[in-house]
Image (cartoon, rainbow, N blue to C red; front, side, top):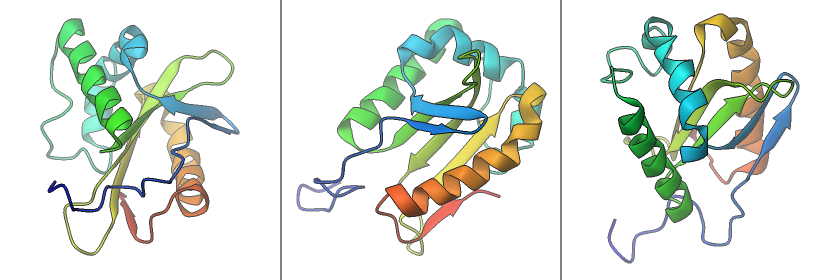
Length: 151
């Protein structure tokens, strides 16, 4: 991005650090989630590949735990630099990782953000409620006018 190009979010925008909702909570994804994140997606690869936003994409694919940590470090660096925002989806009762939410710049000119999420296969019943809450959160707490949430 050129130095004079606007950022993904305004400089004065306070990026949400957490969302607590019925059935789950969101917090920024980072290397501290490595083991639980790795277990979550590796146990649900086929399910994730059938989730809107992940069909015909290159992820998920087999990775080592160390490669996953590097990926989480990249997401944390994007978050810190305000280039994109990845949240881990946690079960509020157990603090188990049950999914992930990605908010990144859109690649088209119609939208200002591209949003995708997945939940573990054994948590598929939570997918619709996660999407509904995130849609409301995007409109009430974020500066986006036209986000695209994969469906």
